[in-house]
Amino acid sequence: MCGIVGYTGGQQAAPVLLSGLTRLEYRGYDSAGLAVRNGEADTVVVKAEGKLKNLSEKVDGGHALKGLCGIGHTRWATHGAANERNAHPHASADHNVIAVHNGIIENYVEIKEKLTHKGYEFSSDTDTEAVVNLIDYYYKKYKVGPIDAIAKTLVRVRGSYALAIMFKEYPGEIYVARKDSPMIIGTTGDETFVASDVPAILNYTRQVYYIGNLEMARLTPGHAEFYDLNGDIIEKPLTKIEWNAEAAEKQGYEHFMIKEIHEQPKAIEDTMKAYVKMGDDGLSTIDFSEAGLTKEILADVSQIHIVACGSASHVGYVAQYVIEDLARIPVRVEMASEFRYRKPILDPKGLVVVISQSGETADTLEGLREAKAQGIRTVAIVNVKGSSIAREADHVVYTYAGPEIAVATTKAYSCQLIASYLLAITCAETKGRLDAGQVSDLLMEMGTIPGKIQTILEDKERVQRFATGFAAMHDAFFIGRSIDYAICMEGSLKLKEVSYIHSEAYAAGELKHGTISLVEEGTLMIGVLTQSNVYEKTLSNMQEVKSRGGFLMGLTTAGNYTVEDTADVTFYVPKTDEHFAASLAVVPLQLLGYYSAVARGEDVDKPRNLAKSVTVE
Image 1 (spheres, rainbow, N blue to C red):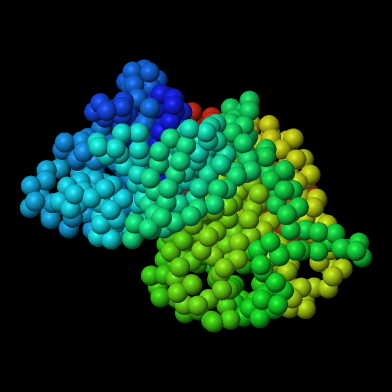
Image 2 (image 1 turned 30 degrees about the horizontal axis):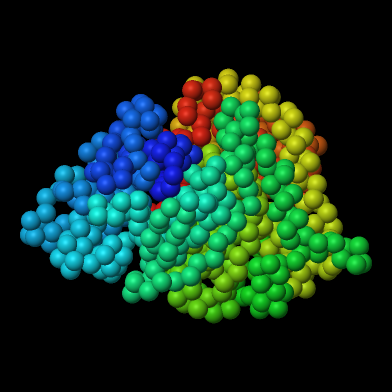
């Protein structure tokens, strides 16, 4: 969940490391540190608690640390308090081995006890220090090279890790190892970079290697050599990152979140272009050949399990309604963190769809592996090519959102919705429930979504005024039915995760079964009403709230003007096919969360305690 950057080459390393870590701040962290090697001299380690600027000030923006090789880290605390003592990098007592680590070592207590008996002392509360000392132990005991020492360590470690390691006797070299936690390696000329995510190195190179699970690498200036656990060299293809560093910059926007909200029309268009083609008969069709997902495969699907976390799971709930209605295939949305632990019963003809922006979400990745272990066909909807989920799934439907930097997802969520609609329509066509003309009509309507989102964004100041007026609120509740309930879940999450206002979403019909007891004078209740078959019922639930003193905000489709008779304030989105309503209705709720956080003075892009890519369980 934290950030790793490493560099070896012809530049001073510390400024490069700080630059990379700055581009990884969105991942969430509570301390930071650097280790820089100046030729044959000892490696200097500097750490700081809190924001990266504290570390930068300690080292004068990196200029106070001389050396052409180094590793850096931003830590999100798991084992041990968030303080300088537990910050990375960690080193063996004699600084023979120095490393940074993402992930969790599950058997670190066992390792620590063993090494304590061997005379090792520990200066932190972290699981990482146990791994560092274990590498040092094997390196010295067996008098082997770094690769062999790391390999001996990894076969005795349980858990997840992305490790970047420096050895005293190997100046100018960085060694890396990976299992489950993301890591990429970039090269250009006589420079080599390692990072936990692409934005950290985009200013320097777009040519990267993706290191696989249980693989290691030796990095020297301009070169990367890869190994398996036997120490045998393995070949890796170079991959070109299609987006550039400018795409990961704010480009004049105050925050990444608002920039990415505005990028949704283009992201949706790019995702649709990848899969929607025009046939010779003038009808639009869906082409999943890039994913290897044929109509023959989908025609045999008996049930679908959607496995995801957070906002991706909210996409799953929308998809559940749409797939079941259009294709009449049973769909179950699974909380990824619970999926494998409840020992799921999966039909051999079923399909497991996993959804993740990063493709590295630990719980979702483990859900994918559970499905594959049971022999179930898997489809991944992901935004990052070469990610773990993309490599391990049977079929991959890529979204084309580009880099998403803000922790709170917006454009990646919207692209996942588009991918799920396309999957639903394809399933319905293969089941004989939609003909070619109906498919084309639905795709034509989907093609209007970007323009309709642009229309909503042009009226964003109205949402801003409303959010500013309610920024001091303590509680907010969202209610809706059917797809509207799924929209409410995402709207509620957006509000709470960036503004820290307590917020909950409820199926409107459940309101009277307990939740309405929380309503008092002035309580903000947001009702979402885009589904005509439950419109009057949700409106009735809103009236129940109003009669108890609640303040009502209505969010509905243009033309549903009777909402104004009940709601105190009403926001409208353009009409669309009701299956696609989430793509439009979510936008005012994204803006509500954003502007509420801004009005409260919160750090919108980096909300407290959260990380962009949750790579630990």
